[in-house]
Length: 179
Image (cartoon, rainbow, N blue to C red; front, side, top):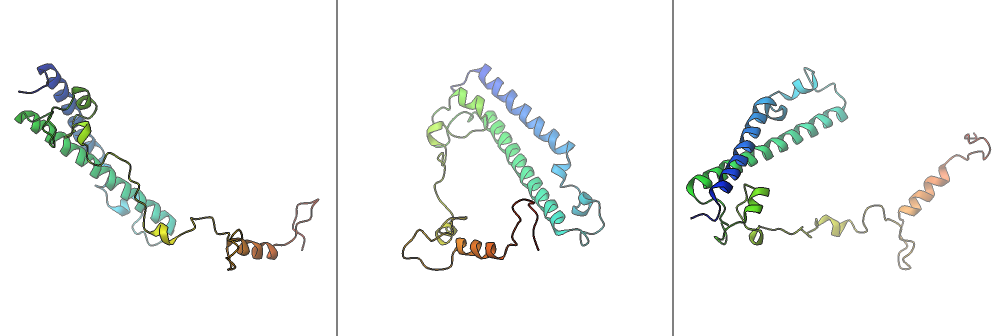
């Protein structure tokens, strides 16, 4: 026996079916985010060899973005299909972890959810940081070591002082470089 009323189940089923139709329509009308075309078709060239590396990098970035969007949409469609299957088998709206009913309001917000709010996997923002940050200390842009009494090595401020010494003087009234 489901904790959801017949009307609530119909509303959620309609919502899932609308999402499914939208996703399927999206796949048909946009050629899977442009992935149906070859890479050279997207830039209008026979070869990428004569293009500037920046242009090629832009195209690669766009292709990667298209692949990611496509994978996300495919995964969402899979979730919708699984939710409809659970609805047909009578398992819809039950937390897979605790077997407790998922509130109707949560199902309205996320109709493909498998979990009640208490059992959502990893609901917290990760505080894990990349291991490279331990090696790249001090953080980017903070290379001045002058404020440390025990540091005497060449640092970022010293580099800027050398560059400044090479600069040509600017006349104060004309703002033009004097040679």
